[in-house]
Image 1 (cartoon, rainbow, N blue to C red):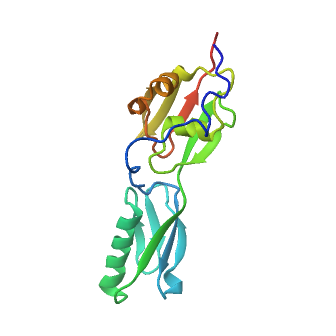
Image 2: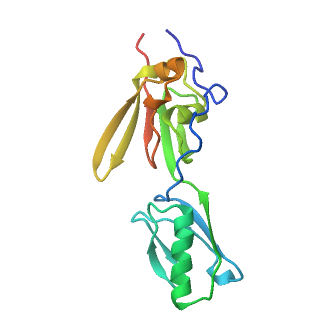
Image 3: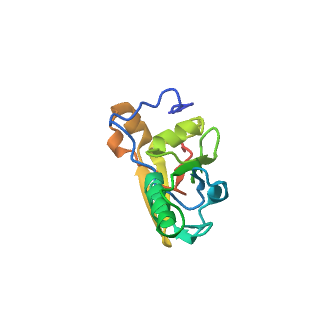
Length: 183
């Protein structure tokens, strides 16, 4: 059985729930912080491997796992405490963490992780599966705290049945592997 371009950006159905989960700041995200009428406090920073950023006046701040809105509130409170009166802080994710799509896809590589992105969607973004792919052998590899978890993703079954509950929502630095079929 050959699955040439079986999954593509055009034929992946939208999830049927209302909105994707809100994005949480991750290692290697690039964050743009602006403070109204405070040019010296408007900065673009990258989240370090330990989940922190360095910010003027405040020093090192832990941001890992916060939503952009939570970081806005945190910076507002910290700046208001000792430095500014009623600061207006905006946070924008300029560059998202990456996920990796490898194996029998048309464009393997690193892709920006968007909130709610699933394994099937990542495969579609990577151009779909090649003719040699084994869709139901697809795996997501997630490494956290020195431990590795592997999720089996039955892509063919998901697409045929429409049962999106068997797809996996990706997290930063996950690797989607589409193996080669041996038939």
